[in-house]
Image (cartoon, rainbow, N blue to C red):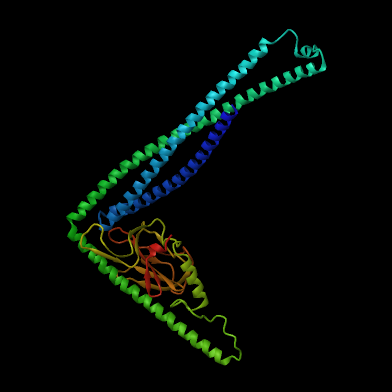
Length: 424
């Protein structure tokens, strides 16, 4: 019997441990589900703006594909949660069944005790029974018997009450889990229906693009031509800033040499920089800023909230239109209309410029590194301003097709790098 009890205790402990793990996993999945739902809502808001203009571009297909991928992730998440709940419901039902059997056994045992007490009841009360003993030892034994019998009765009653409370808790828990399961199943079905509509929408958009492939090829080539003009402007601004910082560095070096010649001591100036590993970070402050920026690789915040990356870094073929190559020195991010654009790190605004097609652009220097923000309607900083991480520097512009899309770039000196490796 003791072995069986030990086995039961071990099983209960393991079940409790597994339930805790499941609860933690479901909590993580619920957070992931909320995040996916938010991202899908953001995509819907972005697509809604384009639909108002009734103009669909090839980049809409990228957004639709992103939405479908998020929807599929969401369905998988819900399916996983539903399966976990199913397991928890089975475990809870088993616990309820075990508790019911335990309560029945306890009540049966208690009834047996009452029958025994009734059967052995005499006309004498317990005190008479005790004092009628032949000696002190027998009287003590009879006293202990009555006391223990009473304690056992109390314990049985308390056990029955405790198990009944546990049964009520488990029953309520089961009801809650079943309701949660029903909600998840309904949500899963709704998302499957939405996924079907989105896939049909994507097919229709793709068919529309294929029918007007020449028009879209022309549209993309025009977009690439605009991108090249803007990129040339950015390249020139970056090169000018590097030349400026190098010239300032040369002036500082010349001043340092002059001071060294005038001084009679061998002590060097405290802010002199030796063995500088950077091209344009030539002061102690700039090097510290550049080191902090470099240490933040993979942790930088996005330059906007609720954005969707619609074009990645580098030279690549257009995913749906043959013969069209896309070159991107940064990443293109689609945003909801009127969204704020933010600095991704502490730095100094070194360039505020008007783009070839009328929008505004900003370049911020972070020691050796520079970040570029394009397609702004409103700029809220000036050249020379110091900015901090996540400070609003402007508002995104919206084009004639209802699209609000920015290009974000990161540079290290003369070298252009992939922002996707730096952003969180």
